[in-house]
Length: 282
Length: 282
DNA sequence: GCGCATTTGGAACAAATTTTCCACCGGATT
DNA sequence: AATCCGGTGGAAAATTTGTTCCAAATGCGC
Image 1 (cartoon, helix red, strand yellow):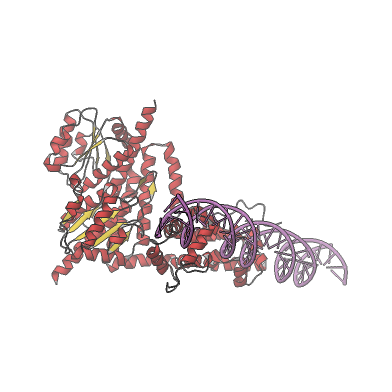
Image 2 (cartoon, rainbow over the protein chains, first blue to last red; image 1 turned 90 degrees about the vertical axis):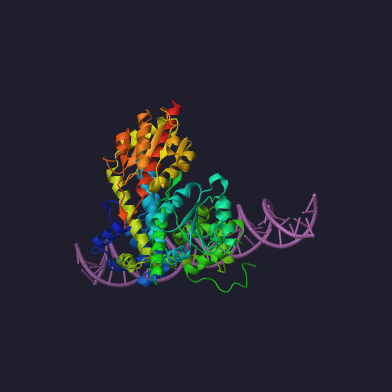
């Protein structure tokens, strides 16, 4: 007989697994207790190792590991290991899963549920942004923007909101901008006035708007510094850009959040303004 | 022959692996490129999954994964995977260490610190939104928007980003809109075309843009339903609006976040679209 | 439009890993 | 002191997993 029939349920997350192990530590036989200690001391190793490796590290036989898992109520060692792996994977509590659960709820109801969903997606995007943001990239982009006389702002369709917001913020910050808004279909002409002492900030996400890509490429070819905010290193924008920032937004339903992008945008604008002020003082 | 003999060396850490993949993305055949994108988008999954699982997720054959690894210079998929695992292992130094790193970079200044600050403000705004949002108000506004033939979108200066985003989203959702963008200073004239079977969604925050207030009042006086997103019950917009939603954004430095407002906006648009669809079915 | 080279899918194969099984050990009980 | 019983080690079995191979498909240049 393995384990105690009375034990309510097998733990599904690391927290409860840990509690269970601590609780039963006393009553476990010698070798199993040895495994218990090892597991709690080296959870990272447990997540990655094979049974044979871990058995070696813990100083027991492979079969003991399996027995240990079964004593805890798992069907085998693999099931137990999955919990250790999930712990590593879910650095911040699994957002994709929560989002899909929210999506289910939204079917049933009302605009509040929708709001919840979009808010959740926005928070997730922001969390991911803070986790992944690279200081080097941000500084590089801000530097280029700060050193330019005037900044062209290029973003069509969904991200036009971002560039128009930037146009407002930059105006407030005393940075000269030109919002390339494709008014009258004159995007290419609007971009023509950017010179090599100016800069272009291009924003585009999948599916990339062709005009944005083309104009960015054209401008870059003319020797104007181009920087970008985009969603993947494979984005066609990265070919034209001297520096770029990667922003991955989470979707909810058919719509993607814009919060992380807006946040990056405003941070860049303020950062560039500060660099300018610092530069002027010299 | 797999890969290019000339390629100097196989990457030993995630950073250089990432660079290599980005670099060679262009010249890779279709399926291998597909794997490349998947790998960079879901590095966590790659770290733990088996070849078969990952092949399923990436939408390719198991053999393609192996080929991908070999093309990059690894002997097989397992070698490649080891790098993804190492990344995950090193990523979790400690929880406390990560927190202090966040603190440290806030102190250190630079654009990362700014980004953190703005992200923090955005998250706070979103949290507050979810606390305070009233289902009744949301539903009422959505209802009015759903019942209108066409929606006028009014928002100047800082919140123009919100209305222009709404114009995009509504177009996608099949809702007819008119973006009142004050082009050529013709705001009042643009608004004149809204009739009593249309609706106006006005957005304005302190300090309220006078034109927005005036146009909203004028339109309301003509019997056009007006709804609003604003920041206080005392906002002048609430006088003209049949229903409104209160959104309080947090500032960081001199700039206020827009995340909560954008989130409310998109939720309203989708909600209105759903109500319309439900209505049409009757 | 034809032939070539490259890429792709899928199945077969080999290696590795997990799990099961059983004999043996050691301590407690009668 | 004999016996019983849970615990343990190790090896064998079963399963899973990574890799290789080859035929079909695809794209490309002539």
